[in-house]
Amino acid sequence: MLASKAETTVRREVKRAKRFFCAALRKQLISENPFADLPCPAQVNKSRLSFVTEEITQQVLAHCPDTEWRLIFALSRYGALRCPSEHLSLTWADVDWERERITIRARKTEHHRSGGVRQIPLFPELKPHLEDAWQLAEEGQEHIIVRYRKRNANLRTQLCRIIKRAGLDQWPRLFHNLRTTRETELADHFPPHVVCYWVDNSEKVAQDHYLQVTTDHCERALKSGAIPVQKAVQQPAASSRTAQQKTPQPLKDCGVMLNLADACEKTRDARVPPRGVEPLFSD
Image (tube, helix red, strand yellow):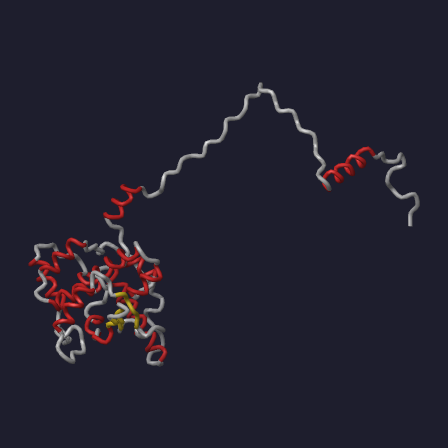
């Protein structure tokens, strides 16, 4: 069964099997772990990364059927939220309009020290869509996203329809690549630890599975230059060997150094006695 799957999928399933049998071994349900010696190192595969440009983003937003769907897409593209778990956990109490912050609760990382709670800025690209949804919210409404709250709700299928309606080609890993695109954008303007906090991953995970090299990077390098060109420092030409050398200036009185020089001259003029330096008498 696993033979027909991608190598990354096989590695993931083997890793899960190792954890499963390891737990059974700790509970003494089995005598040994059959997967213990089977290596499953993490594999970096960036072949399915895709950068969703601002032009494509605006086309998708223009073909979303309503305000809530525009907000769902904007939360993924501009807020880098995990869809659907982090979208559905958002409440209006999580939005701090005065400080322009949004509190995000992630079930995926709730076992971490942070409890899976982080704050992101109310990004300017995201703010209009959230304000539109606030204007349409009913009195006493708790959650920001009110539809698609059932387990069988399939947001991916609906997004595929929107992309097709916009006349665009579907990119791989629809919602995940919205997160990777946003992290790539933010990484161009903010320090890595800040971006990783907002997106809720580590710098290693970001480097291996999120950050992309885009055509915009190449264009900016061509326009401004990847490395600034510096003019070589011109040194004065060496004087000709036939040129007359400057007459050396006499030494001036320089205090201690002059006294030390006198001491050296006296030592040089001293003569070693003919008998040598050995003592005349032994002990």
